[in-house]
Image (cartoon, helix red, strand yellow):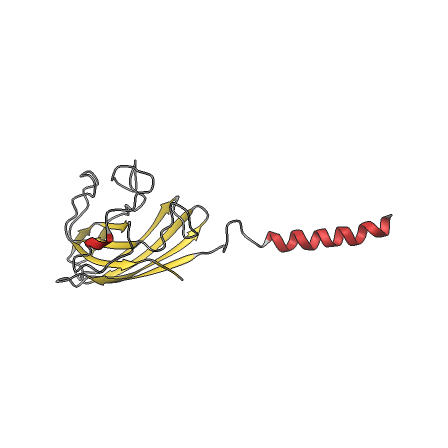
Length: 176
């Protein structure tokens, strides 16, 4: 009886060890990227990288060609930047039907991001976390949506979009 238990135990150990490195829900580090290009009449451009970490998505953005100062920065519902003014990207991504607001406090759209702060040379960098977002599918999936930079600061109050002005740059989020 003991000799039969050893191969069964060994097989179980191999099975458990093989599964332990397999993360729940797919790849452990799902990632995505957006090349953000200027809309008609503007010069802003940049890149945004997205990395899944648990139930959140980390965002690393870098831009140039912006007017100095604050700029609204959002994920929009449609991955379509074909209109000269990027209105083809639709409104802010909001799968949870919340009001527009400050992503650092209180209720807000899932697509509401912290503002970009451009320096005197028009450059801006941002690192942020989107809580509850996904790069792996489902209602909160960011893949196939658009990243949009606006001409003005986001007031985080005006509904539905924060009164942040024209869309100066747009890019589609694609899986890496």
